[in-house]
Amino acid sequence: MTDTDLTVAPTASTTSAFIPSPATPYQGDIARYWDHEARPVNLRLGDVDGLYHHHYGIGDVDHAALGSTDDSAYEKKLIAELHRLESAQADVLLDHLGSIGHGDTLVDAGCGRGGSSVMAHQRFGCKVEGVTLSAKQAEFANQRARELGIDDSVRARVCNMLDMPFETGQAAGSWNNESSMYVDLHDLFAEHSRVLAVGGRYVTITGCWNPRYGQPSKWVSQINAHFECNIHSRREYMRAMADNRLVPQAVIDLTPATLPYWELRATSSLVTGIEEAFINSYKDGSFQYVLIAADRV
Ligand SMILES: C[S@@+](CC[C@H](N)C(=O)[O-])C[C@H]1O[C@@H](n2cnc3c(N)ncnc32)[C@H](O)[C@@H]1O
Ligand SMILES: CC(C)=CCC/C(C)=C/COP(=O)(O)OP(=O)(O)O
Ligand SMILES: [Mg+2]
Picture 1 (cartoon, rainbow, N blue to C red):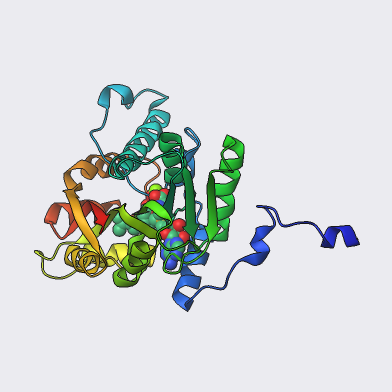
Picture 2 (picture 1 turned 90 degrees about the horizontal axis):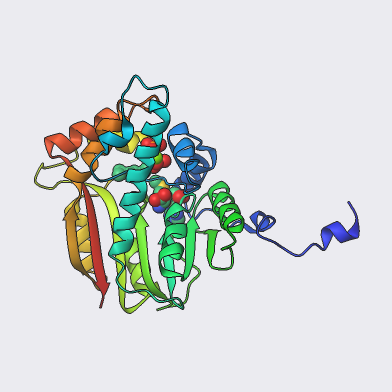
């Protein structure tokens, strides 16, 4: 190695040297989990158009687009259809951010490989700041942003969403797309409330257990074990928002809209084994897929 090698200025690809230590041993486990994740159900769907998601789909299945199961191209069409439904989910989340201008900043908390961040920038033309615990995910998201030529506007960083590197009131909007089940909700909403401008909008799409069922069902426990997460109840979301100046403006039960995605996914070659737990818990009413949009007051 020469002196010159040692004085190279940090770039997006060398910033991994500055990765902060996880705040807790649990966060270290979650960082490792996502650093090693490479399930075909996520990568092959992302390969369809370069938007890589780690969330699920909503909307009706387009059976005409799928065609016959006997067709040799059926599997490819099935993958494209699952991906279309996952992108439709992100579109519905973005619909609830309200009016966002070119000069605004949005925060994607728990951004994964950055699919939702890219969609937000493409829709609003604004800056999007993503945070994830996983260095591999952040590198992947930043690489995609460079390939798309939007790396001056879309960036992912390795950091804890409970302690984000943003100024108080900096964000016009922020969201968690299927990432709130990894943290304490009071801590999470306190941090969103801090980074959001007064009048800003927070949106989450999440799976939560239904207090009307009583306690987390065996299916919910199975999902927790599968992903090493801790699914909260719907009631906990409402309480933690109310305690942190986040006032729900819309609460939408997306459970009926996500079932077709799961039923289609269960027939594919990309199944991971968790499909039955989602389908059964959505059907027995113990688990719900919800969108909550809240105003920062
Ligand atoms: C299921 S993925 C969702 C990814 C993304 N929101 C999407 O829709 O594709 C969960 C994400 O939450 C992130 N995460 C979990 N706990 C976190 C924390 N404390 N701080 C930052 N990110 C976290 C993980 O690193 C992962 O990127
Ligand atoms: C709704 C709930 C409870 C979500 C838990 C968080 C999670 C792991 C989301 C999907 O990630 P993924 O896209 O990596 O999962 P999969 O590999 O199953 O598609
Ligand atoms: Mg997935």
